[in-house]
Length: 410
Image 1 (cartoon, helix red, strand yellow):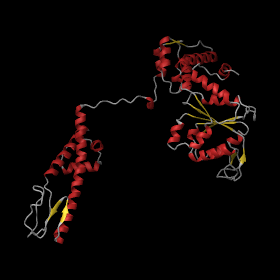
Image 2 (image 1 turned 45 degrees about the horizontal axis):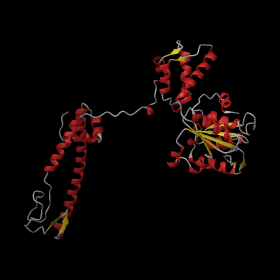
Image 3 (image 1 turned 180 degrees about the horizontal axis):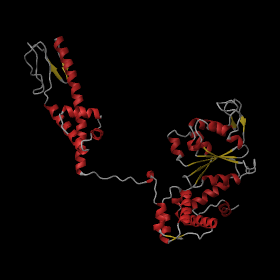
Image 4 (image 1 turned 60 degrees about the vertical axis):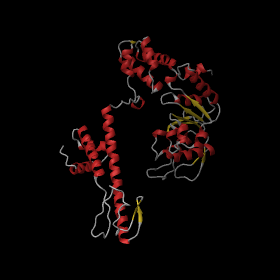
């Protein structure tokens, strides 16, 4: 059977070289028993290719009507997927009142199509690998392996190589499934096929509902070819049928087409980053400085605590010890020239001990900046303390305490 006959039999429309390559490869590997991995976006027709492979293989007559079993791995709950695939014995779990065959046993002698194989849990990937390598299944609740003869055709719409790289899919299973790979290109990569598909789907609707087919104007045709079609052939078919049924006008203009293809999923929308204004930049810098100043204040307070503890030990022990790079001598000495000028003052009675105290001018400056940042944030949000606290990256309770501390009347 040549490619043209295959296309007619399975309603495949298009002449894109990559699509024809995929079809040709499917026909070449169909008579073999090699495992096949079909990749491509959702809606490109991976399930159709699984039928092509099975129905042109030597397994097509196995268990008439049950030769091809299709399983959506992403639609089965993780807790039941082992039982669904491999079956279970009576009493294997609560509710198992009888033994049940799994999909693999049902497909014995034929083909099993595992769609969305990338969604298979890692624990199940290990068991699937054993089935592929040994040709054996073990039903849930049983300790006896059963021999089966099943050909596996798998499909995925994810980047399976990336999933392997990040540990979401087993590398050994990937190589076992990927004996032959078939890639189906998305519709936006074969734009010339889009008008052909619209014509085909329009004719189908016209025949089904006994109405004239729709025809796209030249401008509408170009618009359809430029549209990204993230849902691929499935989306194109649905939209064509909608237009054919709902529109009374048979000549479809860009204005009409726009009503049906204007939707683009949020994750596909381009990200637009607005350039901040000079005022926004200034305010943000001020807030960032205030936050960094707050961190500096905490660090300075910790240093002061450490210094006081160290000098108390010095005064008590009557010994010399270095503190923060300065050498404090005998506290009985009246010579305090070793202390950095303008940084420390000595307090005490009869020089019984020496206690350093940081002069508060720097802290006052920092407090003023912190106070200004709070005022700015509250002003931005019309006094809303929750929003202001979020902008300052502090809790609302902390903000309330700061407002009281600085006696702000807002």
